[in-house]
Length: 426
Image (tube, rainbow, N blue to C red; front, side):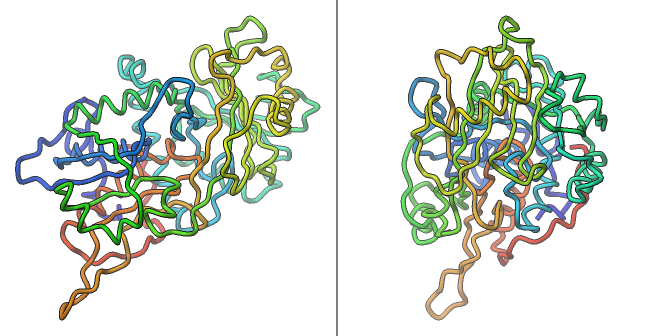
């Protein structure tokens, strides 16, 4: 995939942060249909538009801001993390090796956006101190020691390993954490950022269509390409991968976040992200996730309920109450926190799959009478789980490369271990 240097995002060549395409399309430029209106679909559309493609994004629903259920991309905690992330569900080594590269591509771009005051305000992206706490000395957990060294070398800003952070951040010493490190990380106001992403895609020439696609894309590829005049199709549908990609390994992990007022009146204002990850405590039911969302909203989490499809939680649900008590025990003062009266609880279904993230061409071939089987021009990007924002631009970079391969009708190959060095700049 991105082993080809020409596939990488390059400022001023095939990528820009302005609401116009870096490369303007012509009437002969290929037309790409992107299915999915979440962060993965929108950022994929952005990257393709900057490369001079005509892009149509089709989705059954878009970001919303009322009382109705919001998109998974809006529900997300959207704290950038080096994988495996807080909910700790990475199990596939191929996906994990690529995710480490994808997340650093995204880190560089979110960092650049946050560095521009106008873009930061428009996009809801800020670089904030992000702290990770551990119940034992990091050297006593080989997996965490290896991850810490990778994070230190990755190119993140202001890395610091210091157990004194526990006392400096007023973490309850009785909670049992004994080690910590920190670095600067993108923290994203997802509601604001989804508005901005839609504006960016429209400004670059993207077209939005509200429509539901049902059934396996492979079975209707020719019809969809004819209807939408598309030369290739990108599937960025999240949990719909079960149906859309014929992938029965897709499943949801239910998550929830309590939103509390973070104005400094009831407890000392929290301005940094504080987390204990599932892979650190080896238990997805013991996650601590305390993250500023906006200047006045703090998120408290989290939970990771495998294969739970229902969205029926409320503040009185036992698992939500335990989640809050865990955060209160970790950071004294939070027991005084007032919930956001307009939007107290965010809940959603993280789109996972058994082999984790899938960014690859459709591998099935279409048989042709008296001819060699024809390669599909479908490219998949789904299964990002709770890391859609963290992996966003990295996945989109590889999708763009795969689209180029598909348009050349090159043979499709399965995902492989990343053989490219981690990108520390764009």
